[in-house]
Length: 339
Ligand SMILES: O=C(O)CCC(=O)C(=O)O
Ligand SMILES: [Fe+2]
Image (tube, rainbow, N blue to C red):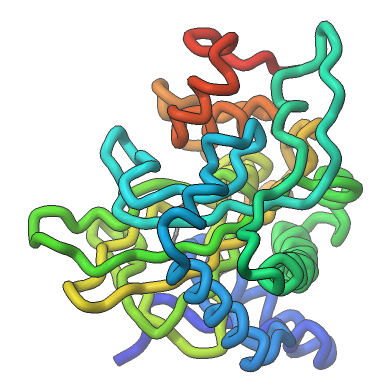
């Protein structure tokens, strides 16, 4: 059977002009067609991958009290632990537990007139009893960031732009985020929402999944399994790339179906994003691509904003109403200020 979700090999970029052009052509068609692909040849070793999955499992095996000590609701930066059912997609609880991590940066001093999104910068929360987790995951974050940069440069070339077309948006202090996630086996057949159907907000998502299935992508009106393929990362397009390409590339709708009883699934999504103070430009696409760029999909309930900080804050507030209430009560009912 041919795979619907294609496999791309990033190392082709460094293997001569012919291999490089073939990679760019494959990237463009994967991105235009299903919007999901497996990425091999990324240079991250099996050992590193296994260590990250193992460390994630160790975290979720901690006693509840230790996980709850670093609950996200403590953090105005939306970092930390969320128990199963604590996050919502399309108004319905997601059956997964997770630890949200960003870059470790100092909290910004708030002054009158500071944009609300400046409150998103600050520290992570780490479990006291797993001292190695921090370096393991921050190391992963750095490695996957490098893969994301190479891939985004390739996307720029595939869109017939300068290789560095997106550089000014993410260079400096980008707001990339990652999570470690555990989907417990389902307790009843009725509740199978691991995470509900959604699009990701960043440029690209680079996801590590363990050997358990559950991830699905919407394609031609049905759900297609993105089965585990050892050693690869799963990549999908987020809303910033859709915005920049005026809808030539589409952020892909995906979801996770909770695993059957007795199985739990681990995944490590990394969301390659942009600086919070950046504005997403509209790329000047060549005529033949521009003709097929029909504008970003618009959801009147949840419009995409070109101001990255405002867009990120809006989606964080929607996903985590408890954090919103504790730390952003002053904004509730108001649109976050853009700049
Ligand atoms: O866990 C997965 O496989 C996907 C997670 C996901 O789509 C997300 O957190 O945005
Ligand atoms: Fe996602």
